Length: 86
Image 1 (cartoon, helix red, strand yellow):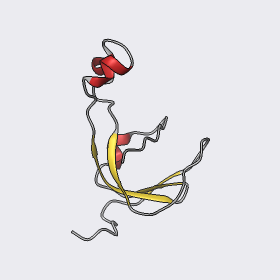
Image 2 (cartoon, one colour):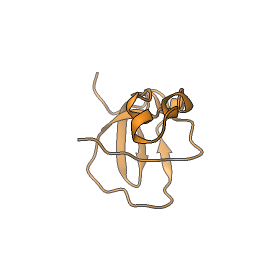
Image 3 (cartoon, rainbow, N blue to C red):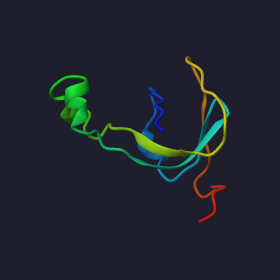
């Protein structure tokens, strides 16, 4: 299952390898997600190139919860403080 969360004013690359929380929902094991060719079809020709280096992240959802539309606080765990094993 795929879900999307759109954020602004956040350096997503700083979240790679860290746990973070949005509206009480915890995420971890984030990795870079490059934009794909499908973007050119779904949005407009050239969308993939426009989004180069800004494709977003893929992250594992660690806790249940709901994220509502609107402003939310992003809480980022300090480096090395992961609750994940391995």
